[in-house]
Amino acid sequence: MSRPPTPTERVLRILRRTLFTFLGVQLALAVGMSLVDSYRRRGKKPKPFPTTAPKTVAIGDGTVTTYTYGQDLYDDMLAAIDAARKQVLFETYIWKGDEIGEAFKQALASAADRGVEVYCIYDAFANLVVSPRFKHFPSSIKVLRYPVYAAGLRFWELRRYGRDHRKILVVDEEVGFVGGYNIGTPYATEWRDTHVRITGQGVWDLKRAFADMWNLNRRRRIGHSGRPLLLETASQWEPRIRFARNVPRLWMFPIRSMYLEAINRATGNIWMTHAYFLPDQDFVDSLKDAARRGVDVRLLLPLKSNHIVADWISRGYFSQLLEAGVRIFRFRDAMVHAKTSTIDGSWSTVGTANIDRLSLQGNYEINVEIIDPDMASALEQIFLTDQDNCLELTIGEWEARDLHRKFTESFLAPLRPLL
Image: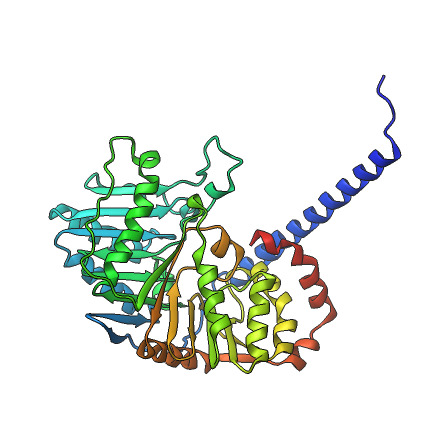
């Protein structure tokens, strides 16, 4: 006969039930909000938004071209693939099986047919809803499907749970592309994002980033007979262009440190554009400290992103940021998906990493860091163009929001570590 529980055991049981109930209600609310928001968006198209034409700046022996409109970017990426003579390295997070997705698939297949070595990496989880038929590739293309579940039997190793959130294209070691754009028809005209095209010595580092990802995962995905992607040593390097790569498998997360170092060094301005803004408190404190020492700190975020729960959780930081003097601008009528920042007219970054836990401490990500005044000027002009399409959030407006909004923000706050 089992003994009755002690008072301590009864208290612990009640606490566990209370905790699980609280977490369950939070998750149910988050799922419910997402479903309602998805229903409301059904059939609605984003309105037109201002963009800037592709702009090229010279850096050393190479160039960096900035794109803010998807169709402009896709045209140049497809042209680069069509002109490939030796090798194409292509990596993406989302690859939709629509018109744009088919155009990329066909361009890669055509390149392989004419003898070009073609490697592709895509994330299986991000493409669960894509037709399996689309994900059938010709044998001439070497494809690495980063798995939905990558931990295998080592389920306890958190470093094996990161998603491949990177977006890279490298052609013939002559041109490389990196940034926030996924591959799909909606992104061509309906989303505001930022990507860069790089020529010169910086391309080699981008190729090395792709090769390291391929070689780290190749045996599990394509069998033990798959050969590694070999690299030659670069004869030169461009010190003004550097790549920061988060590699959870190796427990490497330099992008967060890159941001914090630049923010803490700032003396003039910090202008950041991000699709999702869910930082840790130390990151928030760095922005607040910068604003309090007189730096012009501006955050440009979506008014309504494609993830409503992330929006609500993000708002939990607004009070302390606004009180410190940080200006917050919210982009209207379309989704801004860019991940860019520029500081003090000299430092800039464009990449795939959002300011949230998944990007900064969980996923495979890549950002290019550029030390160049012309590049900073180009990103500042882009920021000002976007700012003209924004509503600035004032502290008075924020403090006057409805009580139910304040309650929802507080209630969902414990979910921050999951996003």
